[in-house]
Length: 324
Length: 189
Image (tube, rainbow over all chains, first blue to last red; front, side):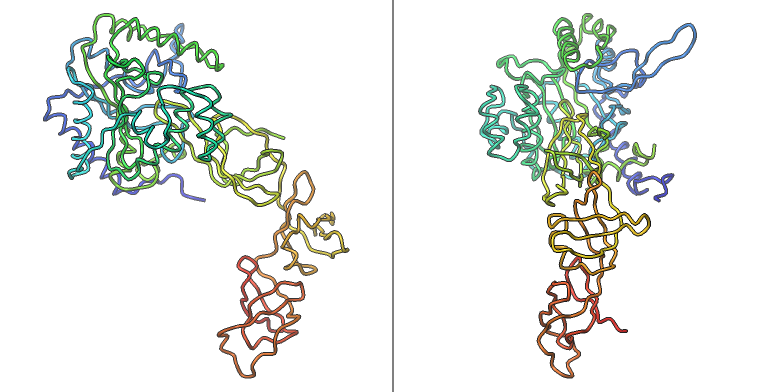
């Protein structure tokens, strides 16, 4: 019987975590990016059908109000941006229900920042600068590659144009035939399957790789690209093939944002999931005007894994879910 | 039988897959930050021992397999079936050649084996980690050689062929590790 009161992470790793936070704060202080705090416990949550949330009740008779633990600080931080905060960052906890594994803990630490006036490319450069800083050494060449290019390089498939037949043929030839039944005619799920099983492992020997131009069907909260409607202005950060972060050129159009909420809610209904009330405060902030900005969220626990060359989140989190 | 969701998948869990009972070896949770969650599972088919990989959508559920391990004593072989008995209840089980498979070469009457039952029928038999068997046949050893270097093949009373030191003679009892199939020591009376 293991002694479950004890931390799973070595004390040395906790020191490394403290040092990481100090470095991050110094990095943003130097750039005059403002540190902010927003509520973990929120009256609204996102509609993304792929994100399961924790809900709880505020008991104060006669009010019995449902509250949600944030899955990310995105909506609240954008409200600050709309209110004229300028560039901001936050280190906080985020919560995602039913996500557990070597790279997942239902409660995890996020570093999220927004740069007013930055293009996506400028923000990618800043991510690389931060990673080099926290790793304490220059990274050498940072690989930026488009989703389409890396996907085609590895699989020969076009990720932007769906052909169930071509994808299925690829799956049979490449020993992922489970994808055929699981993904069916769901383009986005096919992309997730093939990217996770085939493309991502090919990034393992790259210290830092940023994949930009995610397919428009996976735009999340990013803008659709100006010149190519099949592509969104979204990137992901991979260190040694492990997904560390996700960034957007932020969607600021309130009408389009509301449409995406509605579409995701329809998707939720099809999947038998609960329909989520749209975050009206967030939509009102967009209506009042979000400055053009790019933002990114970095998983701090995974970043710490990478810095310490450890194998599991349990090595870097004092009390992971099973010991919480 | 209960159904298990992928969230409950962990090493050792027995599930039904393609009508066969299987044991989960490893379950990996895969999920892009903004995307579909999958469970990538390594599974051993308990009928043929083959290890395969399967992917499930996270949250999907599968039927559990009514599989359990019991300790049984080997009784005898009647030419077609191998008979075992659970020593406390005296329940008897007859296993066919599929269930016994190549374990047959380690079976000695009265030895305690582990039997895996599926829906109360024998699915497979595992021998004890160590067995003591008599040497039925081997080349005559060189007198005075006790170094154990080199070695020679010896056929046991149960049919297994084991590499033994040169000094081992026909009729001697030896101890064997069934996991590696290797000679461990001579058994002294």
